[in-house]
Image (tube, rainbow, N blue to C red; front, side, top):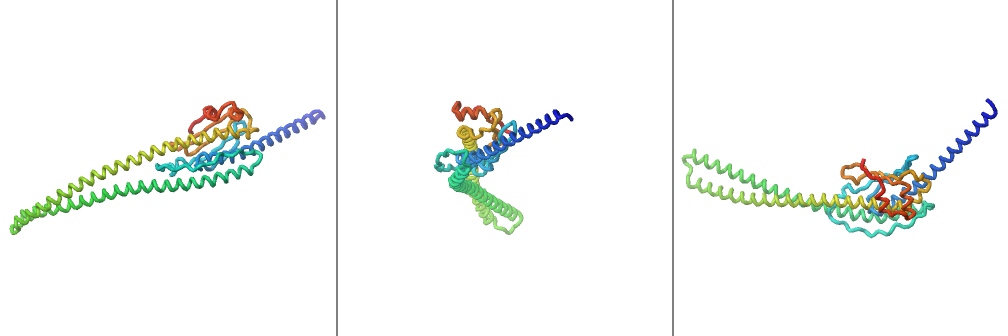
Length: 302
């Protein structure tokens, strides 16, 4: 092998090693920036949604972009509360220095303290709402049980009435007048019980209708709360990207920032939102607003 060939091979090897080292360095920078952005998103989402976001994670797909994923508790049992819950006042999200990771951690702790108070109030509201539904259902069951008791009494009296008719036909020694009197008493008792049964039946129908209306109102409130929560999540994402998207400075402009959101779709599917890095950069520079950034994002369920 000639000296020229060996030299060329050595140069190529050095060049390849240099390129690889540079690529690794770029990935390290992106990894650090994504990690910091994950903490910012966690803090912002928890604050903007009253601690309904959890399990925020991130990953990077080379030549494609950053992917953040998280769960929203809007479809959990707390979203079934149809009683209004007073909103706890939350302070504005403070400015964050990307160079100081400790400040991000402090922010997360601060939001956690605030959000814990909101969770307690939500739990109390949930328990109160479920107690109302439970009491309504118990009242319906009580009325239904009373109606069944009356039905049993009517059957017993009808049976006694038939026995009297039988005795009257077959017992020659029975006194017709006494049997007839007892028969009239039974008929009167049956008639009175039938009136009570009718009233209870009507009462039960009204109560069942009221319970159905409460359940329907609960579902409607659920849907409204879910829609409001989705809007809060979307606004939080776009505002955070506009305010702090400059921290992803080493992410190439032709790549994307995507979000996989679990728990905000009624069909249990995941919602995916994809933002272009170039659009995020425009928002950071003030060329477009956060609402416009959100409109430019691709969104679909999967």
